[in-house]
Length: 348
Image (cartoon, rainbow, N blue to C red; front, side, top):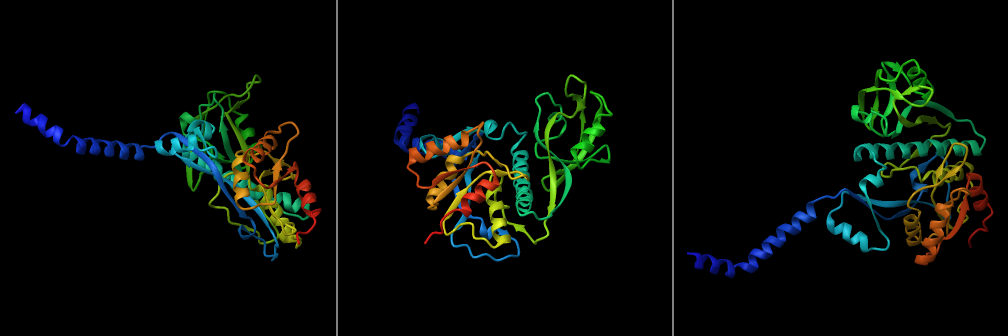
């Protein structure tokens, strides 16, 4: 009997090994890993995604650039990204900045995009000396402090707080003013929105500094509702993050003034935008440059900060290493970007 069994195993050994390998392959293919992959995204015209009610025939294009990201990849995707010089692998913890979970991270990215649109409007109308209505709508949790007990009690990044203990707190001043009447160890009930849903959580307060000021323990920003006098609409729902802010702002100004800022060129770029027109640094500029090169951009607007030249340094290194064609242009403010574009000789 033993001899027959061994004979059967030898006879079907190849089939058994093939079946086992197939099962292992499928298991490896389906198993997700806590990493995020980065690579070149797209370089698309902003024009079709911004409507102002004013028509403008652009001879060239203002291109906003993105990074392609892929979360929870399988082992084969990770290996491919490791050996691909145009891709990068980061742990999920590093990529999300330690966000509570991926849903919280995505909610935060969605708010960053919405905030970018609001700031683009503010910066554009300020640059054109036109009035615009602004209302504060809540306080968003951008990051939880390590000592905070909020995460363990139901709060997470991307939550927008509009009430504390039933009292309206749509501004940071209202929120901090109410919490100042409490002491560490007291509990407060906060509520608001979490993406498309509503949330409520009861959290204990902690000492925020040596003066015994009490608080929940998070970094925050203000959620703004900006209403322009023109019928401006954005179509960036399929993107996340704030880095298209500069290019949005330039497109708004071009359409509302009737001035084709492209001068016939393909102008790619990136950078956050503040209401005062400051252009902020971003991540993944190397991948955005790769995307711009693929789309044959003539110029690339690079966020530049005299105290932190990381974007500019990486952009220069990437262009040199990969022999990319876009010419790099430093921009620290919206006005610098406008000055560069307006002074371009029109492309024939």
